[in-house]
Image (tube, rainbow over all chains, first blue to last red; front, side, top):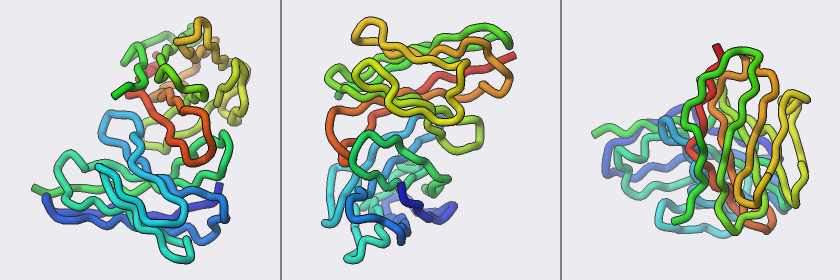
Length: 110
Length: 115
């Protein structure tokens, strides 16, 4: 799977929107962009994924650049419960395992 | 919402002893995984399992490790002779059939402490 680059950490105020960036300049045409997060003392949790078009679900939105070389996970209103490490992962088709990087540690300030 | 469950939540074992970590994947899922996370480090892939056989394994998954799906519901990871460096969180995950757009669902892990 292609490599992704994320900032080590970000901070947000509670109830404000958060934009978590991810660069993946070597993405291939069949790679899906997945986002997972890991809350303290828990296993990774699926957040959202997309291929080319922007995606929305109950947890977040995913904005994908037109050239697909970057994407942004958007939390519309950060809560204290959103404090976690967020991972941007590329997955090709098939049964390939997830390759976790260091992710972005999001801190939410009350 | 269905979830992956792992037992025990914490296992303490003497070095050299065998340990079995248990997972109950989501019932209609067909792909199963084990990952581990040493304290303060990245989540690392160990092994994937499909159709009653290992489909991929990492370099970490050496002869000391084995996996089994003994009864159609449980998915186990056995470490035959534990070492101090096996101390980590072990996460089980499962996925429904499908390609790269299908997410993996993780359990909350077993903390393995080797003394």
